[in-house]
Image (cartoon, rainbow, N blue to C red; front, top):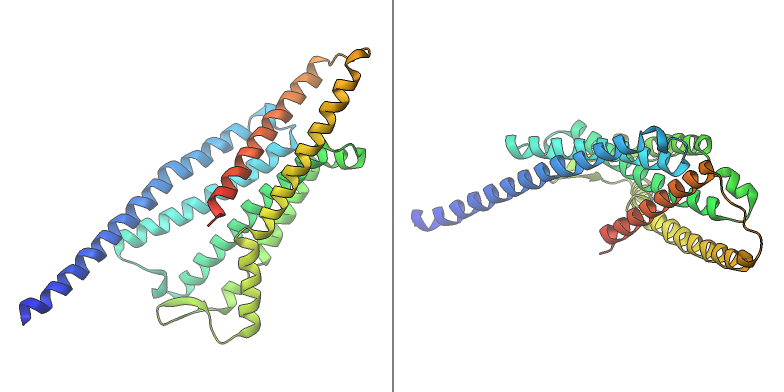
Length: 255
């Protein structure tokens, strides 16, 4: 009887150990590759040649936010796996953990959405929209997004609680509804719509530019100076990187 009861206990301990080691391994991979990738992006977009490109300002800000998010998430996961610690053991840590991850997620996703809007503005025929695609505007938008992202999930620090080994909002209908709204924004539904819409509009604007260029082929060609040519190439590089990030984002959040 004692032998039969010890078998499930031993199996449970083995499965728990496997889960702990797996979590530790994934957290370590995130720390090595994710954080390293973000750090390299920060070095890249901090270079002088990208400082005059508004889209690069968004990429730099997004990389810094992702660096903070991945570092915090990976380090806390490593600590929890190594010392057998869980967020459900501490109400303060529970609130802080969810607040930081939610706020940084909102920042990174909406900054990427702002980068899409920036590229759309730059590709537009409307001169007022094109004038918005500058570094000064990018800095203001980034600051506004960070401010909103810090305020928007502030309810987590007030309403989250631990019950039945679960960290969430309990017995508060308004708080629960607000939390669902935050989750909808955070999980990428609205940013996804913005990114896809901007991508389609950018493609449409670029096709129109190509048609106009073909019409003007038989007319005297205006030669670009070296500075204009360099700026055009940087804008094209930023656009390709933006499309790549949007594709990665869509793949990640698609169930």
